[in-house]
Length: 552
Ligand SMILES: *[C@@H]1O[C@H](CO)[C@@H](O)[C@H](O)[C@H]1NC(C)=O
Picture (cartoon, rainbow, N blue to C red):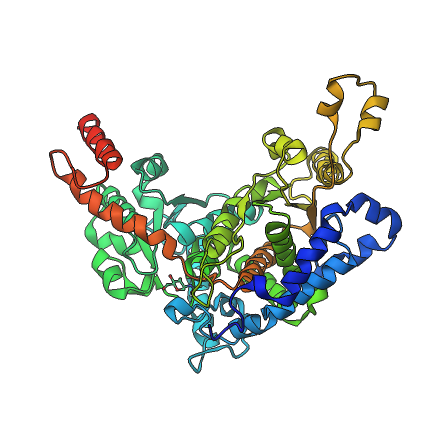
């Protein structure tokens, strides 16, 4: 048994067992459309409004989900029995809930802008977090104002962040989502892939004199990142001297020794603690590219928006706690309806990398099959999260969502106010009309009668039928400000947390990424040598030997 849960398999909890029969008796046949017909309060009852620190709100409408009062009551009971509140409180107390490595999970302390006391190992984290943020403010102010100059005295025009995984996905997504807050003449670029194409294509058109590299790797040993950083340094030294490196490279890392060895002035090193996991690190020094791109004040608002959402998560009763409800719905569909996937479609072009970001957050966290009590689960865990911005997504894979054989619970996200209200806001009204229409269509569907009334006959009829009753959660923000985006990310972080707590898995490690890394290292050596290999399975041997022939 684990110290952080008083059960092993959640399928043995009384509420889980009750939900199995509730699914059979109610869930399986519940028609959301009919529920609306006989419950005029349904929309009010199953929607919640989150108010951010700046007064702007986000409406979470859960009412188009396949639930009723009874289901909701039993789901909330499941959260209680699974100890979601207890684990949440332990996380916010800095307890070592990342048990496989005995570490705290404390990204919430990175957005503690009220500077409350938040301790790990008896030490308050607030002063150190605040001091790194002050350093980030100074540095980003200097870059943005042009006070910071390169080796020929010119201001920086291009910032290249080199990092992978959590050191890339967060900054990429946030800088894209908040592009409206950027300033002209200062661009950000991201190089993550070990594929040389990524670096080579990024550097085309950049000048050594005006480019600043941020090397983002906690340990400064990540293979892809150090290789890309060394190649970037070689490119830089084509025009500059070794001594100039300090003006063009900064590190987001904690390994001072390796950072100094690389040639970076450790004054320009931004650290973070061992309690910051990669996929939760956009709030830390890893967010430096964001602070440079949108300015520190906006970055600070981004943190404050997440902090406000944390307050919602820690203080709102479970019945009205949007992250708890989001997580419970996910469990409801995954474990009782057998859904395998979850679609997130932002109706927002700036948020086009949001689903990619959530893929890591959700799937790296909850793609586990062993409980905190060290036994294999006998139920499904991590959902397959996917998505694309709409309306594009409607013209690609929505066919399957509407008429396919799979149940795909979906979240749709829209802001009421556009940053680009062109043509008298015509585009935004068209975008919004699709946002409303898609969730309506998925719920109400279209039956045979109606299809026939519209003139279809014979064999065509079944092709035009929409079964409906396909669940969606609509998330409607007033505007995607830095604070709103911070809150939305925190929403999904805590949804992921709630799912993991109920499945009783450790959402915070990622042992599953290790094996491939180790094998790649060994194979890398074999590729450096000439001659055939024979020490793998026949398929791997055959592929390696063919590659050697074709690449030389
Ligand atoms: C949990 O521990 C693992 C294994 O050391 C580490 O890689 C991961 O970043 C930690 N997670 C968090 C959220 O700190």
